[in-house]
Length: 396
Image (tube, rainbow, N blue to C red; front, side, top):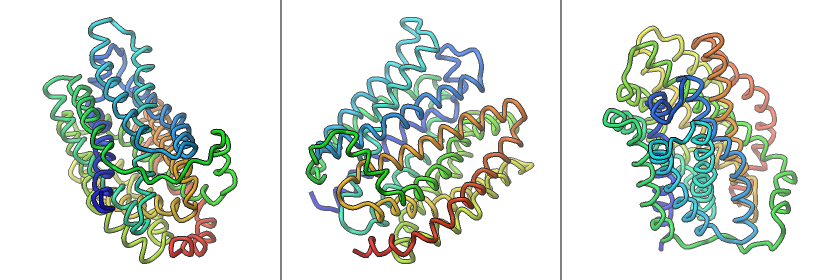
């Protein structure tokens, strides 16, 4: 298989994993009600948080196992198949067995532990490819953005048919992607034969990784915020249906998808600092602007702005991970990035849900946008100091 075809297939795997995930967002409150929950905001918060807590816990495990064994593909295929079965179980078990919502959350966590293998290691296989780190991470970014952009409106339409139909569609998508992943040659470096903790130790030996990890955390925090708080806010403030909510969410995800690849190529040409700094300077303000918008039309325009800025930042941040690490330990490094991002998504869900429940939606938007600005300012000096060696590595 050629490098270009391998890049396309790996991007397709990432696309399908994200599409399956985001199908659930537009009507998550109706989904948790169908699965036995008795509240809307709290139950939706814990349903989304269970998956991302598993992402945080298991991204590093899969990355370390992959680096140790020198294999990627078997874990991607296995994660997709297990994720498919667990998505189907989420839809089927509560209706047939009367499974409590607490046990539903446990199944949801297992589903997250499985699907993070397919997602994180597919991104790592893109890192294994030659052709420019920005180009490869731009392919990952456009797959992520496209999956989320299509998932939001499609999920909203599926909810109009049945509240559990998005789960069955997600199961079918992951089942279909498993043989697709098996077609890609494994280009992972040979395993180092060490124990799992030896692979994980590489992160401590490369403190520069904390910079892209911090920005990955920031970026995904706002995504988690919009997945929960944004979804419920749009429905409550503007009276939108799940289908209409999916369209509004797509106003963010569509430009985020379309612009990832060209912005990734741009970061190869101009360096990582400029896209990340320009993005972080505006991103938090744009998030607050969405919460202040008095009409759904202005809120939608704000979502487009957030998507454009996010597309500028995301591929440069992922490419910075590849700039910093060598050939060995890539899976562990990318797993750490995905864990940081998943932790940010989890924080966006939990913090946003708590603040919205206690103080209202506007306060939640202010916290999310203000947190973006504050964390970006804290990390910015180290990013500026890191740019020359990172670019030297990229050129090498």
